[in-house]
Picture (spheres, rainbow, N blue to C red):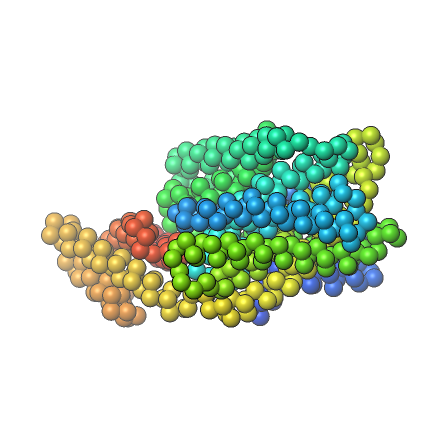
Length: 520
């Protein structure tokens, strides 16, 4: 099987499985991992070895960027305190616990056990976002889990570089040096991400070319990542910050056709990359196991022990933190529902795999770094196990907890927002009529459409086709103008905290589709 054939087979497999997962309403990442392991165990399938650059440079930036774009800056500001505690404290606790457990149950020495702990210390934003898309979590919980998974990577990355440096050089790194490295990596990456986001905003303000806008959207995460890495800072942090900043402001920089095209292209890219990378995680595991040395054959026990450790540490960290926060808010009875979901949503995924693949194979003295294959096997095994176990059980846990938003809640919020938009459009239409800036027949038709929307009448505009061509053209022009008014009202509702970011995005997309349908 040639390399090109293998790639095409992997894309076809991942696409088919991901499509089936959507049809069966089960988490795609979990099913993709299972399918990958099943295919990888077949005798005629060749061993799969992934180059580090394939994951860290080609796959990771757009997936991180897409995850970051989904986070509202406004909602992020509400959860920065628990996110900060989790991004620092929980990462350090998880790394220390995994290091101790791995030293006891595997042949890893202290330095390599520390490397494993640093690799698996943080949750994965790609996996968390992919699993969370199908769950109707409250905005605060969804943002907290996603933001933690995005921002804890900076801490994990510093730990990983410190751990690898200790293993390669053979000496310990002082805490002041580790803090300094964190400031350089995290702070430098944040500056690069902000600079890239600012440059993109300047460029997008000066163009209305859909093709160019799409190219900019695709290139932005790669530009942020590569530039930050070339400056020896954190590429992950740069991509995340650029995504959050542009996700909160990007919709203001483009018109309806551009927004729809960019969304369609990026959704396709993300679907393909997510499908391939999760299938690759499962497909690679059997080949890694076959390459292990005789003293490393006890890897299943190591995977189970390490996976149980990261889950247990997360539970033991989040439940007390949630109890303290609920007590400070004055809640009389401590609830288990939100901390249970937040704990169980912390899966591992693409980020740990990318870090494990980048571990150097030799020390500074030219000797082989011991047990590199075992670290990669344990990492892939823990990733696969958490994706399968937590992925398949997260939705039942959310239903059991009762914190998921009911469809009626979302429908009511959207209906209120649409009513407010229709009233704003009617008010603007009345102003135009008073100024005699719109033909009477067109104004009457538009008013009937808007009033029918207020009354939830699906027959709005049914007689528009009987109007003469000139009236139809006037109707299109005026309706597009009213869509602009509704878009401004939608933004006002969001800015005044009357609707969620999810509702804003959904209604804006509907307005964009209508606007595109009215274009000449």
